[in-house]
Figure (spheres, helix red, strand yellow):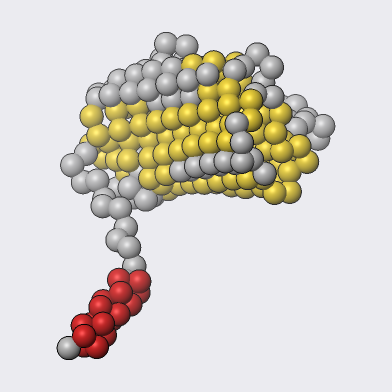
Length: 252
């Protein structure tokens, strides 16, 4: 009997390992965004229901002009097709409160996510793949922002304006930002600019924790006019892994 019980338990374990984890449930109770450019003016949950593309060269593909908004990309992609000379931005919010964007791909813009404003509070950017944006993959400001579990890859290549361009995978400003558990891969400068995986610029009491940065001039930069701490971060193929701030351990 004991052997039979052990055998059944072992088979159950194998089944649990072999069975793939379910994908995140699609948000269906939402206001769909179906065409670009789009402006969100009402609070609540908004979502994509398909991939969306645009050839716009300036402005915002999706502009959020309301408080208390969740924009769920539902695993779909927001794609700019204007090329390396684009000035367009993917998803923008300014001077808003409690805005979240999550769960999808933003590709081909000058800035993938651009949330800011000194009066802004509670921005969250999570589970986003910011792919092949030409200046900054994710840029977030305001009070109490959180940037977590994002995959920022192949940022750079802008041909707009100055040929010497400093490029950032993740750029945060403001008070109390949290940059947590992100992967930043291949941030590429132009000319004599500098490539930075993560920067906390003009930040008060910021944290950068458990991030992984590869392929950049600087891994994590906390600017001289900022206060911040970092720990449990990894870098690889980075000329200068860490600049500024206070290391509180386990950075490599």
